[in-house]
Length: 435
Image (cartoon, rainbow, N blue to C red):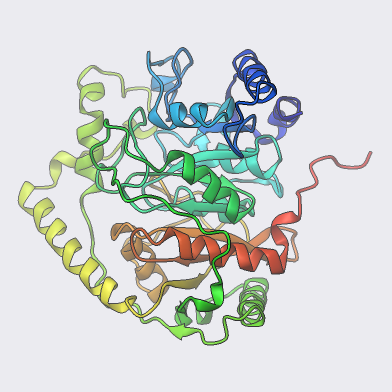
């Protein structure tokens, strides 16, 4: 069924780089045989999934979405691929990423949003978001440096989890920033994210940044015991009427399920103009640039981080650490907190820049919400996006739950409780138009 849907809707959505039909069918047969023999591996056993095409799969192309690398392949699997195979999940497609993990434009065009195929699905986890929302895979694995899971999840009405930095191994995955890159699941339902994380959030002995702090999920956690905050300015800054209405309805829904005392969270005035992405990306692509492989990349590939002096890079890292301390102090009184989203469709100015940009990004964030987004990202905070309704256009709106590092459980539990009450994750885009 999933392979059929992938083939059926790819012409509309452009979300598949490589179909893995034979590979997937072989894995599915193996899963069926294991289950019949009584070797059930858990809730992911036999479940079809798709990998963002910066994640290597042995024997298949890993194109990074760029014409410069469209014939590239590796002779090893990424750790996340091995872990999901061990959990019994069935990989059926390599899914589109924006070129070199930026935006939703790749060498075969733009990946589309199933709710509105006239617009892009945002990026750079464009394919996993589009395919999951369209019911072409049960879940996708995306990556994020700065919004690349949260932005397409918001655009496509999904529940996307950006884990804490160091939760999931990045071995076998294209890098942009060794101090920011993260892998995470894009699903429809918060508890599905927890199930996937249970399989992939563990050390692998290859990526030394991965923590051995266990990922624990308590499906029976009483969310009424959580201290939940919200950034009021994020609600005040909403401009689209649909986003305003849905955001406040979401707060009312949370109050109705027992989150009666929402605590204010103030965004510190400590935003950092972090210059690390340029040097870190340049370092990763340096070998390719020297070998002349970047010539076909759009715009010549990534910015030249060599123009940033080493002293400035180190000073920005120092400032980043001081900012992280300020943000930790500002959020210490809550277990989780809510940020409203103004995403109701394609932003003015088209798809933004950078690995995670889903819209036009100001040169320097000014509003509290923009400032918080940059700070929480640089501080490696986990976050989970959930749909909170629909605009008049039919496109989903959303909100995001955040927590301090390694606080995935409270935000997943809170998102699950909200979804159980609101039910927006059960709605599906209508891709088949009546004749």
